[in-house]
Length: 445
Image (cartoon, rainbow, N blue to C red; front, side, top):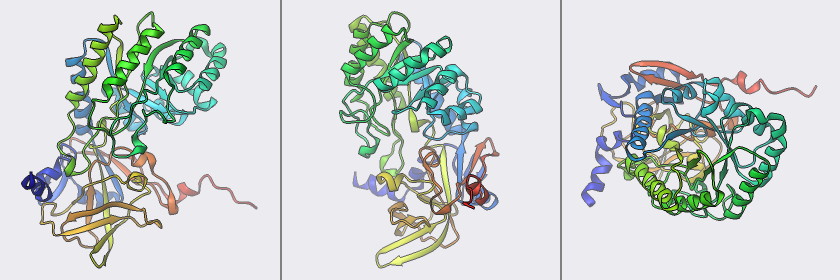
C-alpha cells in the first residue's frame, strides 16, 4: 500500500487519468485533442478553459449503455445545467438525446438558445419566482415542484396556461444524505432546504388530484460528488413506497437524482465506476417495483459533474513566486473568480506544468490567484516540479462548477472557453472585456 501511494506521487500516468481522455504528452508538452496547450494559451490568453468533446461523448455514452444493459424500462440521462451551461454545451446535449436540468429562467433561456426541445427541458429550483414558473410552463416539458407554496402558485397559473402545462414531479426530501467531501454538497438530509417530507408529498399529491394538475413523477437528490452509492438504496425504497401510496394510474417517472463523483486528485483514483452506480440504481428500482406491484417507471438519472468535469481543463500563467520559509506560493492569473470551489468548501485538485509535465517533483507548493482574499487559493501543499515565472500550468477536472459559479470580483473578466474536437478548436465563449463589465452601469448625474 505504501509503495502504491508513493507511486501516485511520482507517476505522470496516474495524473493523466485526471485529464481528458485525449490528453497526451507530445514534444515534452501537454496536448488535448491534438492541440498543444502552450500554443493555445499563447494564442487565446489565460486564464483559459478547454473542453474536450471526446471525453464528454464518452461519459454520456457510458451512462446510456449502462442504462440499456441494466434497466429494461424507458430511461433517460439528464445534463446538469448548473455544472456549466452555454449555447454550445446545450447543443451538445442533444447529440446524445439528453434532458437538460435548468434552474430558473436564465438557464431555460440558455437551453432554448441551444435548440433543446421543450420535452427535454427539466426545471428544478428551491424557491422559484413567478417569472421562473411562467418560463417553465411555457418552455419546459417537466417542472419539479419543491414545496407546497410553489404548488399553490402553479395552481393559480394553471387556468391560464393549462393547455400547455408541463408534467409535474414532486421533490422528496428522503432524510438520507450521501457521503460527500463537504456538507455544502449534501442535499438529502433531514434539515436540508430542498424538497418535501413524506407528509408534505402526500398532501401535494392530493392537491394535484383535487386541482387536476398533471402530476406524474417523484424526484429526490441526496448530494453531489459522492462515490458510495449504497445510501441510495433506502431512499429509492422510500420513494417507491410513497409512489405506491400516491397511486399513479398511467406512465410515471422516477428520478433518484445523481451527482456521481469524479476524481479531482490522484489520491481519488481510480475514477468512480459509472456502470456499478447505474446497476445499483436499476436493481433497486426493479426489485422495489416488483415487491410493490408497480409498473416500472421511466427512470431518469442526473449524473451531474461526472458528465463534464473531467472534460474541462483550466490553464493559468504563473506570475510571481513567493517563498515564505517552508511555504512556497505559486501565484497565477486566475483563481477564485473562475474557480471558487476551494474557497467555498476546500476542494482538492492536482496540477501539471504544461511544458515538461513529467519532470521531477521536488517542491511542495500552494497555488493561489491574484485577488484580494486569503481564500483565493486553488491548491494547497501539492508536490510539484520547480516552477519558473511565466510558465503555464494546467488544472484537471475543471469542467463543472467553475465558470457557472464564477464572478467579477475585483473587476476581473471571465475567461475564454475553447471547444476541442478532433484537432479542431472553436471559441464557445469569448473572453469577457472591461466594456462588458461597464455595460449595465449608469452614472448618477
